[in-house]
Length: 171
Image (cartoon, rainbow, N blue to C red):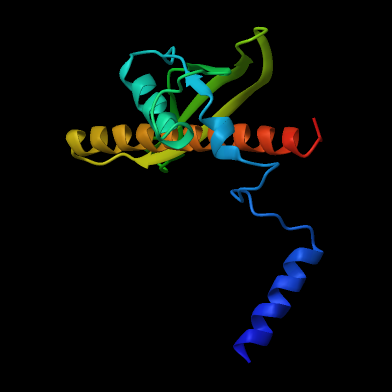
């Protein structure tokens, strides 16, 4: 019964056009493409957040280390977090904040210096305001880290989708 179920699932997945994103084939080896990307230092508001974003992307795009012969360069500019009141109590005092962060990025072909991908990644994370100021500050720092991780995921998947579409002839 289990074999029949697995066969039926495979038939349904194949008939809907499902293709595994990370499948290695002769035509679609995403790991080789992403390993050809060198990530420039991130331009940001304080230096530390840019390092976090860059390290996150290095682990995702080039886990084997810096490429010997890079074909692409990823440039990122990270905005300063904007903090706004998110939830306001009846007495007019905010009980939570919303952090909004943006990162403008582009992927350049090093050979001819053409920008082949240019986008903006956005993230919004909220955190509560507590009576203890230290705890609130820790929540704020954690929210910024979560926003940076979210931005890194968006950039990573945007690059993966670009190379997948390029390989499949859609670009």
